[in-house]
Image 1 (cartoon, rainbow, N blue to C red):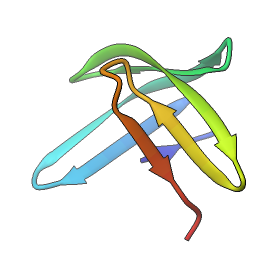
Image 2 (image 1 turned 120 degrees about the vertical axis):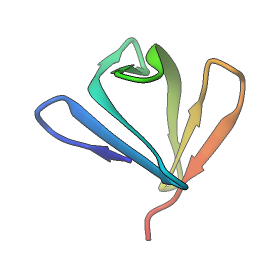
Image 3 (image 1 turned 180 degrees about the vertical axis):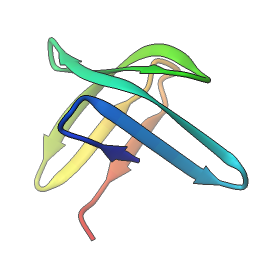
Image 4 (image 1 turned 135 degrees about the vertical axis):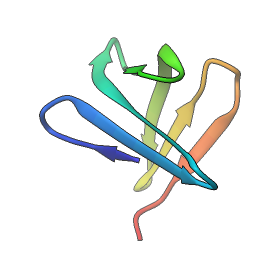
Length: 66
């Protein structure tokens, strides 16, 4: 995932799936309007240098710096 300062996101999961669209923050949530998957908002929290994102499905993703 690549979030650009101009409000656009690019996503490439490999295996031939990619998507792009707009992103914004709203009330502690990260909201996207993707071309293929449509609009959604996810709760986002930072803890000890690790970013956690809870998707609308309930799945929690963990992002750590490389």
